[in-house]
Amino acid sequence: MPEGDTIHRAAHRVGEALVGREIISIETPHPRHGHDRWPERLSGRGVRSVDARGKHLFLRFEGDLTLHSHLRMGGQWSVYRRGERWRRSPRRAWLVIRTPEHEVVQFDGPVLELVTDSRTRFDPQLAGLGPDLLAEDFSEERFLARLREDDQTRPFGDALLDQRNVAGLGNIWRAEACFHAGVDPHRPTREVSNEEALTAIRSVQPLMARSAAGEWPPPNVYRRSGRPCPRCRTAIESGGLGDDNRTIYWCPGCQT
Ligand SMILES: [Zn+2]
Image (cartoon, rainbow, N blue to C red):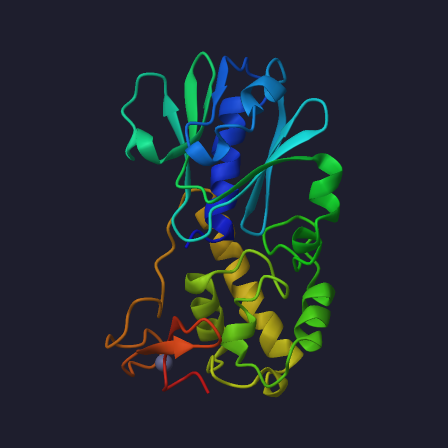
């Protein structure tokens, strides 16, 4: 699943290709949007800005219209030079925006909607998002408040994945966050101190920022089950965790 750093990186690339550029055409090839008339509604409007919040991406057009996208498990934003071969089938394209130099393509949906700017501020799902770990105004106090409002019997590793607690953290970074804090992800949240919770998110924040800028910091535990822990050499374990049973990775030697 694309995580917040992936979406921030995509927002940066899409923004470079679209903001202030002439928009030649907007197409919505996917049948689900066949009757939405977006090309007509967006015709002649430039893109003002592109921004990300958690795993949501917003293309803000002139005149108060915003395309809101969430990639869920398999979606992707791609930027190609005109004439460059796409790396996914054109049949999987939901949105194609062309400028004189680029084609910006959103593949495999599945959440793509045209809304007003005010709707992006008041939509209950978006308003319920926790503080975005990669936002300049990220608030540790808000994160702790959300975490403590959550079910305190919930495993900490599961609570970190809940976008209402902190937006943008996905399966890779929640595992790495628990590793850096030395916290077993199964530990109930009530037994995790504020200091440990803050250590967890502070440790991955700069790594996610580097990843958003196009670097790939190597993981310590993610997808390394059976391999030695880089801190204590114990074999890393993996298993399903939480309501969604997503796979978590941890070191049973130094994460307690
Ligand atoms: Zn270890």
